[in-house]
Image (cartoon, rainbow, N blue to C red; front, side, top):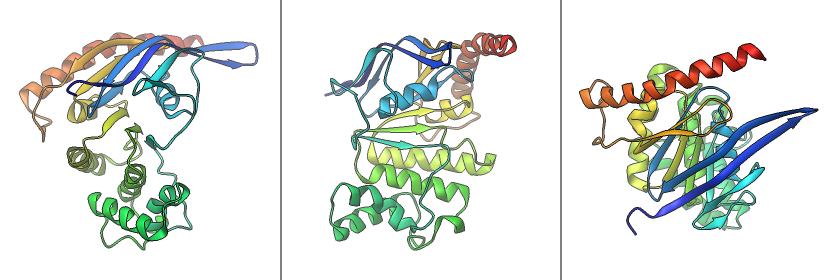
Length: 262
């Protein structure tokens, strides 16, 4: 079904309690993510971007409101959601193949089938020939490719990505953005991607969600109706980037004021 809503956040508020202090990370956060869409969330530091992602993953629960995946409330982690973190969190004692197979084995898949499926995604992320390598021998970009392959291998309904390229150098990050677009075009997964980078957001997204300073709400939604692959210097790309930056500027100032008061 065209434009089917895959994920829906309804009146989500998240409050963290630290001793006597209450921190409202998100307040009345509402969002719809369409199926097969690449959604990127941007906002100032501390606005609750990653908190929202972790609630979708099932690691955290809303204080108020609910998050629905295919119409069903999310109450705990599950194989219908794959997640890629900023740090790949690979098992150092397992090879590339072993890391990608891990989730499949936990799900009860036979070793033979798990190996076959893992190899399919290792090829997709461009790591053919490295399946027997251990994480300590890989570059940062290669480790993140393993993380992406591992998250995709058990065919989740939605892929969650928490600043996965934030720790990479500028050139590797650019290459990884290009590679991720190719992978997404092959899989057409529903993706929610969190980043601080407006350049990255406009390059990757179908839809950009701009958040307010804490407590995080949706300030604006911008549709990026540009063909792929995109050019970082294209006139239309630059126009959209300026629109996102204009929405963000006031919120970043508010965020800095909040930090000064702490």
